[in-house]
Image (cartoon, rainbow, N blue to C red):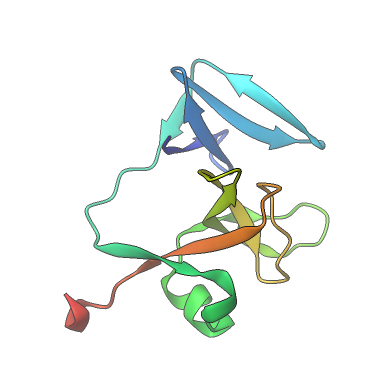
Length: 113
């Protein structure tokens, strides 16, 4: 699965040549006119609970803003039934992937490469 985006600001995951995204509390699917996240920046998945909030703000991949809480959202990976499921997470730890363990994708600073 890869990270996708609908309408320029709603993030989701690709599956079967479609972008699956959450809106109004339910999963929606779009098969055309979506974007896929591409990056050549070195990064790593780190446990959400082991990363400082300031580090997330500075190095995580932003995914938009929660329309209800106005919390900034970042790309994450949740572990569900032994599978990695992409989603978004806010700094208030409101997980959008309905999973137990959360990992945030952190871009590595140039000096660590």
